[in-house]
Length: 126
Image 1 (cartoon, rainbow, N blue to C red):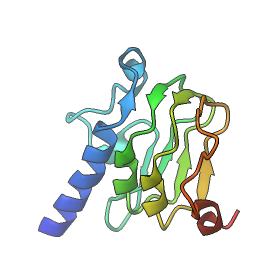
Image 2 (cartoon, rainbow, N blue to C red):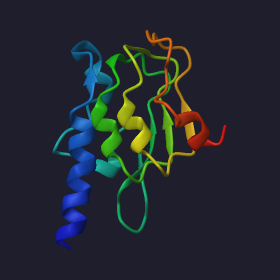
Image 3 (cartoon, rainbow, N blue to C red):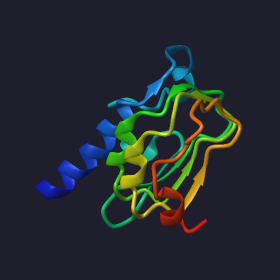
Image 4 (cartoon, one colour):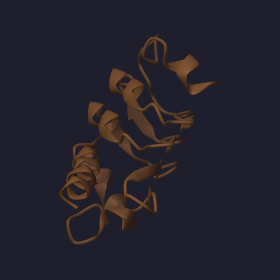
């Protein structure tokens, strides 16, 4: 049980550390300690371990940068950040998401020519 609580908390902290623009956080008002993590807007959890397996923030008009903490969502299978205003670069920690099968980041403001960490695309089996 202690391991489950720790890993659940790891996921929760990874999402809390996201660097989403303050003026857009109203869209994610459920992202607080009053709501269980698996009931947060855009979050899908696995049935067995209650770990974050999906994050769908598509079209929520969010901005900021994609936090390196996203690499701590070790059970993440699907990530959809498309149609927002995220800027900066794709953090290399995304390469730690070895279960990731679906990644959607189109229609954002990604500023790097090398958008993905080295070797990441082949790992996704695109």
